[in-house]
Every structure is written in structure tokens, then in C-alpha cells.
Image 1: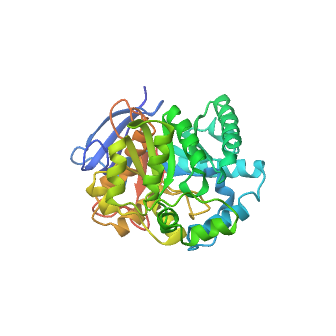
Image 2 (image 1 turned 30 degrees about the horizontal axis):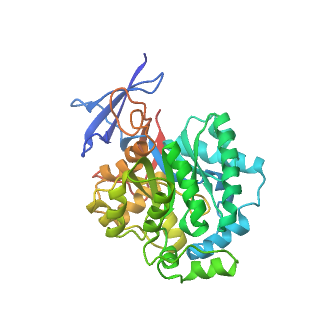
Image 3 (image 1 turned 60 degrees about the horizontal axis):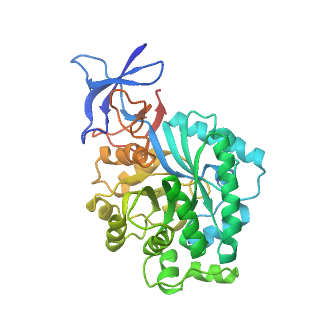
Length: 395
């Protein structure tokens, strides 16, 4: 065993609320296993910055990396969907795979140890099956017409077999209320429940809410203009509509790990409804993506008040300029300065690990775990990330 000791002004163990000031982490260099953490002795040299467990990117579409810098900002969801439809297929599989590797390598170097990733095809599989980063892949499905359901589910089942053969943890998952017939939403949710994991785009925009509540707004007009069926008008939120579709797939309560992604329009009654039926529900936020598309942010104060298990993601390079978890943290700190840095890092590491059921290995500095060690440079005097902060993997 080769024991190595590294130090920092702040060590965020994430098994306690406060960081260790002038702390150390000891680890086994051969396998990355954490051996001990503690406070440095008086007079010991302490390196600048902060140490944190490896990050978990709780929501990404890494296969869309070929769309980097190709999208207009501020178009709203309807405009964003139009751009996706226009641009997503410009690159072939070889080019897409090369960019997946480039960006996964960058995320790994920046300290991302695991990722909950969305896939619509197999262009990321060759990279994932041999990469150091752990990924759980959610095979997302679309189909607005009821008659599409059987064929779409057959296709995603075949794609899941390809993932299984590559040794990639994967399962079908529904995309969102506005891209799917009720039948397909329930069928794909049921397939995800069988595998134990769902990742679902939920309440990402007011346009989505208007579609379900009143059959109006930009997204409704977009769908109708395209000749697509729209979900039934319920007068309720899109999250409650999703809960109803889950009930068509399997009876509540749900012990499976369910990730609700974005949550920009989340309200108290939605939280109450989800927590009543979902026993392992996690709430992913992607702040820079939400600003990119429609200049909005999720209700962080409400989420904290309810003690929600928040996890942090980057979304894709179609709706973000980077896949940099530290930039996401800084966006949160700038807009919600009252949130402690240890809590933001819990969202960026531990809660994502818990969603992936990998928290026995990842997410915190505890003896025996192998979360990876990240050094965050250029933190302020209180240990918060700044506009100049960056991260690098130590091990």
C-alpha cells in the first residue's frame, strides 16, 4: 500500500456539515481508497484551495456534445426543441463518439467520478464501457402518437440489450410529458421501474405547465403546428400528470430511485404529492442550462425548506457552454448566497451518488470509500467557489 497525504485550507468530507479547516486526506495511491481525514498539525504546510469528493453529474446528455456552441440562447423550450430537431443529426456516429470521449475525459480530469447520463442511441457506449467514470445510462424515449408505443418500446428494448452486452448499466426511461403519448409515458416508466431507476424531465418550463394545465402557450402551439398530439389537459401540474402515468404502470408507493430533473416550476403541492408516493425521490437541478434556455432557476429556497435530496447536473452542450460542475456551483452560490458550500457540494457529490445507489463507494470522504479526490482552486476566505474557481482530479 502506498499511502499519500494531501492537504487544503478546506476539506469537505460531506459526512458532516462543516469543512475541516487546514485539513488533510490520506489515501492509498494504488486504488484511491480513503484511509483517513483530519486536521493538520500546527506548522504543517497546507495547500491553497479546497478538497472535495469526486463529483457526480446527476444529469447529462453527453451524446449531444456535437451540438456545442450551435444553439441560440433564450429561445424558451419550444424554440429549443425546434433547434434540437434541426441540428441533432448533423454528425455521424464516429464524430459523435470522438466528442463523447473528449468531453468525458475533460469531466474526469475536472473531478467527475460518476454520471447519470441520457442516451437516445449507442454513440456513447464504446466510450462508456472502457472509461474510468462510472455511468448509469437512461435510454430515453419519445413518441407523441399512441400507435407509436409498441414500436418505440421494441426499439428501446433492443438498445438496452446492446448496452447490456457492453456491460453498461442502463434502462429505458420516459423523456417528459410533452414529447410522449400517455401510453408511451406509462410503458417506459414501467420499464424503468422494473430496473429500479427512472430519470425524468419534470417541470422544466412554464410552457410545459401551460400545456398540461390549460392547453395553451408556446409549447402547445409548437406541438399543434407540427401535427403532433398533445397530452390531455388536466388542470394540474406536469409532475402530477407524471404521477398519474406512473400509477398506470405500477401501484404506489415506489421504492425505486426516481430522479426528477430541472424542477423550475416546482410548487409545494407538487412536492407533497411526490413525497407521498415516491420513497426514494431525488431532485436534479441544472442551473446554467435553465438560464441558457429560458433565464429561469428552480425554487431553491422551497426545495431546501422541504429538505429535498437535491442533486446537481450540467445538462448537455446543446443547452450549456460547458460541462463544468464548478461553474454550476458558482451559479448557485451567486444566486443563492445563503446556501452553505458544504450543502452545494453535497448536491454535487453525495446526493448524486445516493441516487445512483453508489454511495457506499462514492460521494464522501470516509475510510474505505473510493470517491476520487478533487482540488478546487481559487476559493474565497470562507471556502466558497468564486468566478475564478476551477477543479482538478487528484486521484
